Length: 346
Image (cartoon, rainbow, N blue to C red; front, top):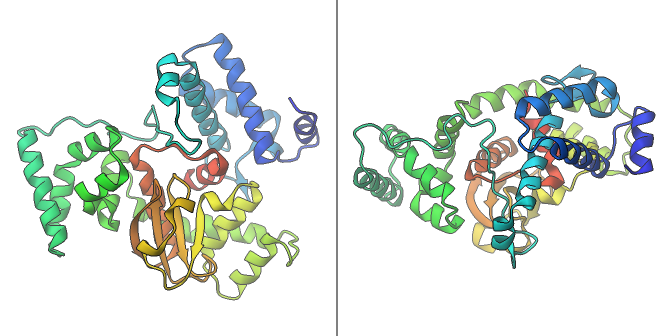
């Protein structure tokens, strides 16, 4: 382990994002050397003991309050690492990945947090019936139908086929064409609910009122130089900027993670076809139409460098949609994993 990392732990300081990943990598490698199939509960117990030994360095907390168990983000980071480690050990997957670019999509192997990742075909349903319902949904989308009840019913009834197509690694452009409502606010919310059992709209509303405000209060009481990123974010927030956006930006700065992996700013009058998607990350990200996500009035969300929704009115809606986009079987990018895992934790 690098001397800087050891020094951070010994002096009870939070390690940088790079140092934290190094610790996780070393710990997971040690675990894997003695147990080829460790379970989630094992990682949870190890993370718990790490937090007990180094609370100042690893515990999940904001404003002195422990978030969740205090070791959720560390557990999830180790689970993600073991997935990657197993992939590296698989000769078949090595052959399949040859020639892939550095920005290749990272797909989840294990549906952590999901309760219905691979649903069975509903009783009494056939593939033909599913296809007919899918075509009906496409027709309703093309006709700009406002029959919300029918759309919701059909989206729930075709959840099996949606998951089948997602897990088959269809290209994002094809998914958007085949399941257009899946990339609208209500459609992706329904899919997320069926997948996880969680109403993300309710959870985000609660987070906006509690977690995000608590995060901002914490950083407001820290000494921030108004000339640096954190200070500038706080100044804009106090001047009326979006509080949810500010909380996310402050977390990215706190964890020393790459903002460009989550957020991209374009001209405030830009439309989807004008966005240079080649410069966007391949994982889900938010595109703010304006100079800053704190002041933008319109947002887009991109997945796999494809704009999948361009009419989101607030940063909170865009963040909610971005989180839901991970139902596409995509891993959190390692460059912003700590921020996303912290936001996801209870």
